[in-house]
Image (cartoon, rainbow, N blue to C red; front, side):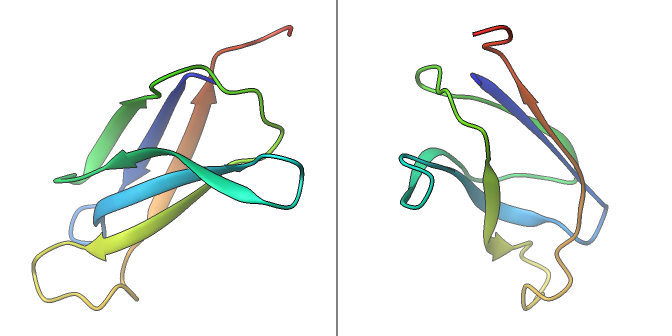
Length: 85
């Protein structure tokens, strides 16, 4: 993968998030961080292509409207690149 998209709802989005993949199927490491995100679709280009079967997105900070993080909602995650390898 080399591009990740994250779709979040109005009023229920993580302002900062990061994405991890497993190096060996068990140990996860961060491949991308994004800050100052708004609602809608956010595209994150990875610094380098990564071959991984799984990916996870973690919300690091909810939006600045006093949310505690419990209201963060992700509608869709897209992972693109490295097809057929």
